[in-house]
Image 1 (tube, helix red, strand yellow):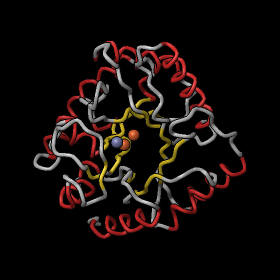
Image 2 (tube, rainbow, N blue to C red):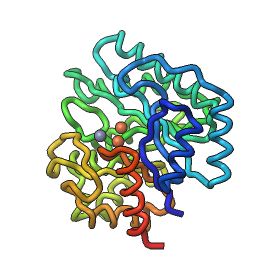
Image 3 (cartoon, rainbow, N blue to C red):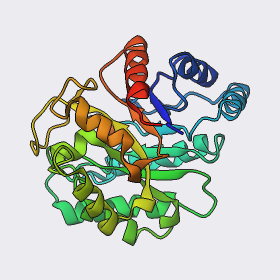
Image 4 (tube, rainbow, N blue to C red):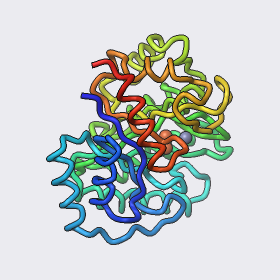
Length: 277
Ligand code: FE
Ligand code: FE
Ligand code: ZN
C-alpha cells in the first residue's frame, strides 16, 4: 500500500482534516497539535477526534503524524526555553493520548553555542522526562539539515539520542528528504548507500515516517528550504526512486512542500501515478 498524505491545517478541527485528506487522494496526513509558533493548544473536542478515528479506520489510513511546534527547543541554553519545551511536549503527549497509536515528530533543537554534545544530552534529558511506558504514541526524531547549530543532522546524533533515552522503545525517526540532502547525504547519486548507512547506524526498523520534499538549495549546504516535488535540486527522478525503493515500501510519506490544498492534490496525483504497484 502506498501511504501518502500532506500537511493539513487543524484550524477547522480533526474530522475536517480527515475529510480533506480523502478529498485529495491522501490516506494519511500531518498536522500541528497547536499553533506552530505559539504555545497554547486548543481544548480537544472528543467527539471530533472520535469521528476522525472512525473515518481513518474505515478508509485504511496509515498512522497520522503530529508535528511539534517549531518554537520547541529542548537543547536551548536558556532554562526557561527548556521548561517550555518540556511543558509543550508533555501536554502534546496528553493530546496524542486521545489518538492512540499515531506518531509525533519534533526537531531535536538548536544548541546555540553550547556544542553538539551538550545539545544531545539536553534532548535526552527532555525525552527521559516525557517518555514513559504509558505512552501510546511513538515519538519521532526528525532528521535535520544542520542549519545554524541544529542538532540531529547526522545519523550518529540520532543514534546517541536513542541509545541514551530510557524508554527508547517509544522512539523512532522521521526522515526528511530535503533535510538529509542538505545535511550531506547524497540521495540523488547514492540512495542505496545512504539507506545502508542509516540501517547500520540507526536501524531501518526505527524509520517510521518520511517527509517527502524537494529542496531549493544545493547538496550539503545545511539550509532548510523546501521546494515543490520535481521543482528543486532533488528532482522528479530522485523522488520517484525514493517512493519506490524496496526498503521504504509500506512507510507513510508526508508532503511538506510549499502548496495549498489544491497544489497538494496535484502532487499526490502525480506521485501516485509514479508509484510502481
Ligand atoms: Fe519538521
Ligand atoms: Fe520536515
Ligand atoms: Zn524543513
